[in-house]
Image (cartoon, rainbow, N blue to C red; front, side):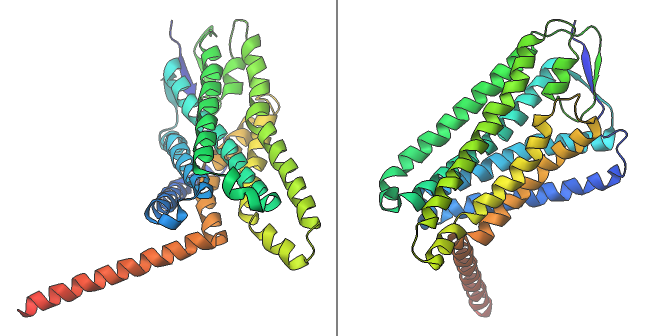
Length: 316
């Protein structure tokens, strides 16, 4: 029998009226990520390996927030929602695939900075378009496979009756704890999935910055060290914004953290990093700023020529 799952959503959370602002945050996020993707596609100078990562990050942020935020707003406005199990699992697959891909995308960006600073003379040979495309494709394949395995093990679980999930989406840790049959494999995956998807990438990033710091320490002048480190500031901000709330959510199990705290933390994690990522990279990356100015000037020039032609024709 296919029992329905009820998502409680935001019931019991104080001051939840402010969650309506998530809609405006989501719109800003969509517009900014589309802008970053469009700028990278339109400017030939930005078609380098580094911006393949940034384009993919903007794409993942766009897809991830679009998969989750509409459901947040749907439950916020209409409250209780019953769902068939497989609909719930499909929604979970897209959410976790995009969330884990964000983590590995930060690894790709970190690798780019690591090679650029420690091996600057070999950067062009090591970080090529082919290598970066292959790296991003392998990350996508790994994350999709991992999400499919995690979701697949949930399909073998059975529920004695219709269950209520105290969240706004089918949270893995909450779903396998409600099962009636043996849930050992799902429990194992629930514990090791965050390690593979979040902890190992974070450890790689931290070790990379230890190596970068050591390399900059050996640089003769302080000015050169500061100049090189400035190229990493955008990435460091992205890492902090993404990993801090994610670690709070996925380090603790569903029983270790209050459901309301988990709901608030997870919803904010799904909304604010996708909105802030393009802002950080636009402000910290001179090439994107110059490209935006160039596109703006071209638009003004084209718009001015069109108005001039219209005026001439009206006089005739």
